[in-house]
Picture (tube, one colour):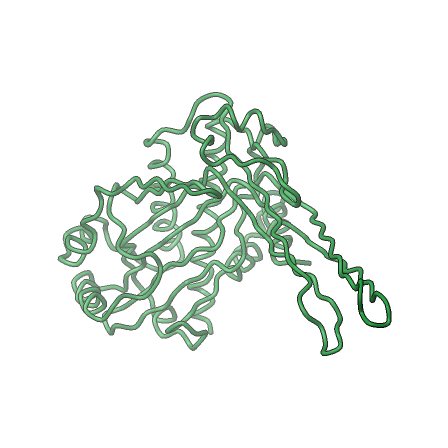
Length: 343
C-alpha cells in the first residue's frame, strides 16, 4: 500500500475515532524528510527546539495543474537494448468555482489560518513560539523580507497557474533552500535576537491529485537476409487517473539556528485534506475555453494527452478543504519535531 493511500486511510479513520490521532500524526510526519546540507545527514537543529520563530508562511495556491510522464520504448539490437523512441503523456486540470471566485481576502485568510494553527499546535505540544511582532522587528526581517510588495504573486505558463500569498501580507525570505553565507549570518543574528531558531514555511497547495501510468511496446521486422526492409515500430499508451482532493504537494521549508546550522524540510509525499470538496469533475474542453484566464493555457488534445479536466467547487468548500490540508501539514510538522526529539 502506497504512503499516499495510507495517509488517506489514516485521515478517514481519524474522523471516525479520535484515538487514531497519534497514528495520524505519525503518518503525516512520515511524509516529511529532513535534509542537512543537501543530504540525509543527522539533523542538529530540530531535536533541540524548545521555542520557535515562525518567520514566514508562504502558500502557493495552484489554479491550473499538469502532470506529465515521459514514456520510453526500448528495442533489442545486436549490441543490446537501445531507444526506440519516447512520448510524453500529460493531464491538465483547471479549478472552477460555481458560485463566486476566490478573493485576495479569502487566500489571505487561509494563509494566516495555517500560521495560527501551527503556532497553536506547537504550544500544545510544549514548543513555545515567538510573537509575529518580534519577528517583524528584527533587522534581518526588515531587510530580507522587504519584497512584500511583490505579493500576491501570480504565475502561469503553458502547464500550470498559481497565486502565492504570505502570512500577514509579509515578504518571502526563503524559498526553502539554504541561505548564502552572508544571509545565513544575518539569520543567525535574528535567532539570537528572538531567542529561538527560525522556521520558513513554504507550501504548494494543489486542488487535484493527478496520476499517469504509461506503457510501450515494440514491434520489429528484420527484413531480408541483407537487412533490407528492417523496421521497428513503437506504440505507446497512457492511463490517466485523477482524484478531486486538495493536497499539499512537494515543497521545501527551512529550519535554522544561531549557530548557522540549517535543515531543509521536504514534503516527499502528498499530504491530503482528506475531506470532499468538489461538486463535479469532468472532461470538458468547451468549459475551459470559456474561462478567459485559461485561454492562453489551453492547448488542443493530442495523443497521450487527456482532454482537460475541470474540477468544480464552491468557494466555501474550497476554503474549508484548503484549511484542513494546512492543518494536516501543521500536525505533520509537530509530529516531526516530536519524532526528532525522541530520536
